Amino acid sequence: MKRTVILLLFVLLLLLPTAQAQDVTISIGSETGVHADALIANADRCAMEVGVNYEAHQLPPGEWINSILPTEAAVRSGLYDIAYIPISKIPQFVAAEYLLPLEDFDIDALNPDDIAFFNLTEYEGQHWLVPWLNEYQGILYRTDLVNDPDEQAAFMEEYGYELAAPRSRQQYYDQVAFFHRPDEGLYGNIAYGLRAGWINILHEALNFMHGIEIADNDTLEVSVNTPAGHAVLADMEMLYGMADPASFTAGWVEGNANFTAGRDFSLVTWNSVLLYGNDPETSTVAGNIGFQLLPLPDDMIEEPKGFLSQWGPALSSTSENPEKAFEMLVCLTNTESGVLGVTETTLGNSPARISVLQDERALARFPWLGDIAAGIVGLNIISTPSIPEWGSMVRGDVLPRNLSTFISGESTVEETAATIEAEILQILRDGGHIEG
Figure 1 (cartoon, rainbow, N blue to C red):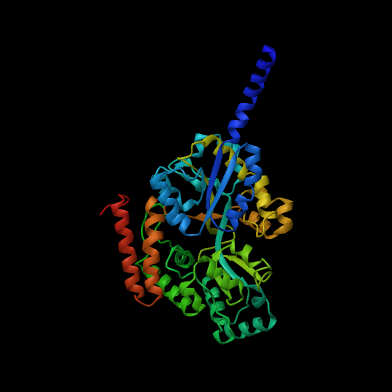
Figure 2 (tube, rainbow, N blue to C red):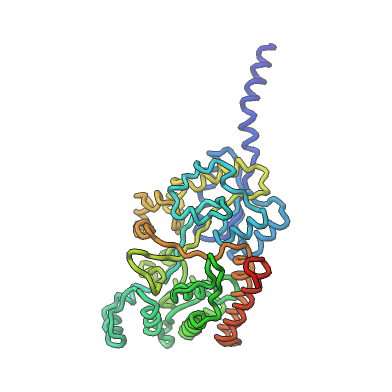
């Protein structure tokens, strides 16, 4: 009898760690969106592999990263063990002491050498998230229009060169003007003009297309109230003059919906919109969308450049189970999860792992992933300043507020440039990043 009791206790002790692990719940917070959907689609399988439960909280785009998560980082209530964020927000959340560095764990378990541009997640000598989405900024355009023989002939007659994917800033502007036909229900472009972070996308892109940056990543020299900065704003005003009227109030969801409804020739955005645009269930232009990296004035085949946005899961410092959260992170972002995020979800993903970009299963669904895999070799990435205030104050307030006033006609190019530059410089001074 005694031997039976001892044996039973021994068995219970062996089972105890498993029971305790199953009592652990890992909470994942993210915005709603195609790439976050692809990540969370792996949560069931990974929770079983790690031996935990999980909760997934998906909040509205914009609100999640600009208000909900910053509030959580401030109050530290421990709502999330894993937070899905863009690299641009790393300095802000590190300053708030909300993230745990990956170096606190077995970082090699993440196989970082397999992740394109993993170095971009480094801040203050440590890495803070695991890239899941690599998203490139460029121009979406209607290939059915560009490849139409009648349109090609008419364009050649008017502009004197062949109609094709826009390889320069001027070529893009010519195409916007050529296809801007309001009387036919077709507009040259649509922009995200909502007074929020979305409005920055076109402005940032035009800066790169002019060969400048709003502020240099290293020197923090600001280039808004300069001749080139004025030219950027003038071009932005010109494009809004040939834009879908919905542009002035469109955020990410509305802008993409108008483009995929066939109302617009082009959209300056990120390549993940290809996933929405090529969904035949919701898009009237599915299969007729091309993507061109932003044409830069000094672009050369030998040294291609691109503006990249990475999103990925990071570990919260408020987690009560950081080791289990890290195990979950490893599973959620490994090659198999990346492939399943492309192949087993409704719209797929634009993955960060090189092994996923080259996987036959992923390529069978999206052959263009192979072009990305080839194109990232030697690609020089343009970065934005790695300071906490850039994401929260400059991109979160100064730019949206002033650009909104500008596109509505309430301020001139010169007034807008002077105000934006003065406010950015004041933020940099107040933060101790520059003197004077």
